[in-house]
Length: 640
Image (cartoon, rainbow, N blue to C red; front, side):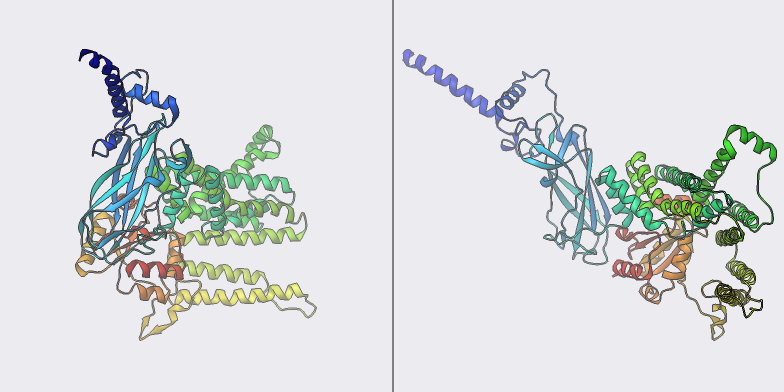
């Protein structure tokens, strides 16, 4: 008996050792039901070395090995109900760890009348994984956007289960994990979101333009982001907020006289564009980080009036009334510091570029808002600022081309040069009037435009007798002069009859039943957060949806929306049952800033839509000008 036992003891020892080894290497997920228990499922380096490394970790022999954290400390999960039809699930990932893109899965438990659309995830980074091959993974942070299809429109509680899996860079993987999230959905007004994703659909979740640009910065490479924003800047360069800079720069070049060279014109233009771009970038980064609107600070009547007066003085010098130059003592000093005062000239051009960026073009557009949203959400002022700089360079490229070509195309001497300078003088007067539109009544602006056109008509010879031997050019100028004279007279008549729009000067004469016909929407003015909440409460009691328009007198795109989009009959018909609210943030006081900050809005024009329950339909938020057809489609979709 003793002999038999002695013979079996090596087998028992071997069996025990084998069992211990299997128990040691067996994944925790197969021995416990808790899906979030820390587990070493497969060593990423594989092979024999990975086997012994895993065994050493289990037996406590790896004293110098890295200690891995529990998954709840590595992958920190949070959820947000963006609106009744959209959820945002975010993971903050600890440094040195990552999540697999294809391991995400979402389910709803015990919920009727609500289904999940296909989740939308950003592009991950490619990584060669020893276990799974080439994979897309996420580092630092990732957000999944999940649309909801709702037959159940009532406010309700749901339980969302998120499934995911990640690993450590050091070579160990966690098992598949899941976490339940209890969320409160607000009341919905329709069954499905626009472009909603059915469970088997691959259609993208709707996002606002600014959100798409912000996500593009987060997902794309630096070079692709810069190229994209440069292209967007090119698209914005001829908007009402940038176009007036063309005559400003051209006038600076023309003011250099007949001795201007192409090379000098290029460097002056480049100085202007770089100063403008640097100012836009700095102002944008500050707005993104601190939520302030630096441009709004430069829209006071005193600053706008002073800048307009400066343009008038520059125009008068173009007409030859006087020559603008620095005092002789200053000129002598600059001559000692630089050849022909070029340093002083470049400094002056740079200052003009800086002021032009802050005063001439304070407009909000979707690409600009997207960069500001990205800066505000991530705090990454470097990438956001680089995008803004690329955007500004795109906006400034036509300025650079026009300014440089002027140095080559402008006549060198003779009466032609005087004529060209007069043309630029007229353009400077037009820019001055355009700026004054923000601070003086529309009827006065109509009178100024009429006066400018009549004076130009007289200069072109509209009232002079045309001699029989007059050439073709003389006849052409006289014809243009007569057109300007007639239109200028119409503007003055429109001023006296109550007209306000230079494109429709005689609207004041069109009366039906003694009342002036209105071509724009009628908004109810609100002030501050409390004023908006009160208006939303009233609309909720009536069961009506709401549109909120952020407006300012100094916002040119706001006036463009008013004249073109809001005056469109189809738009007015779509919004006939909608409560129309307007927040006039011209003053940019504390209440205005608090309201803008509450919704993360950086400036007008911005438009928000609310459902009858008072919940914002954030996927339809609009920033910048939108033509009537596209706006009507957006509004109709939001309120259906």
